[in-house]
Image (cartoon, rainbow, N blue to C red; front, side, top):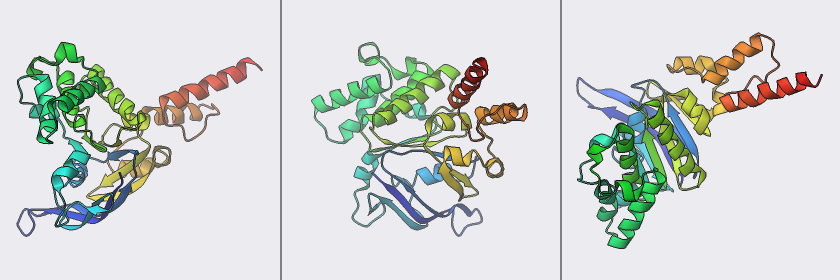
Length: 287
């Protein structure tokens, strides 16, 4: 499922003293099965942009196209669009409300009018995806779980609707390292299985480096740059302009190169850096 934004602008409180242009002439395309990271400092327009992708917000001007269909067209069924484009807000666990985990995850599929059998299958499948045992957690109150587990239940509720596109707004915000790693691993696995296009809003350049295939960097409501992670991480001045840094591996690689190690300039993940240091060690050992 492709997503295309054509000259999209969005103005909050237009015509009032509080008018604010959150998006300014945004044009971009996201292809089917991409893993795209949307990056930028707080207030740059990232969250506003992703809310346009399933029609929660309508642009002040411009078009949002899902598989060539205008999300805000006169005869478009936005309910179906929202089933295709699943949006996970920051701190989605705050939206949990049912008495059990299974009932909360089943809420979306029930609203889709599915049979009880199909709903049950989807709940079990979604819980498996987020690494929560159905037998152990289905009848537990979500409010008796840890913060990371609650986050996974909330994401499972979106997955149970089987969206073609999964949009996650800072999915690891506020989690401890273990909960963060579980969420990121789950999203990585979902993408590897080819289940969905992933669009992830993130401030963490280390997370982006490990997971995304492409970056879109925003600043002041505009797209500052777009490209592969390898391309973007070679432009630290642009990232600095957007209030961002570079991954740990990029900084460490630069320090090692300054000390004379013959490492490629464009390394940006710790795995790449490890493999290249090991290669140099083996070459030195055989000399």
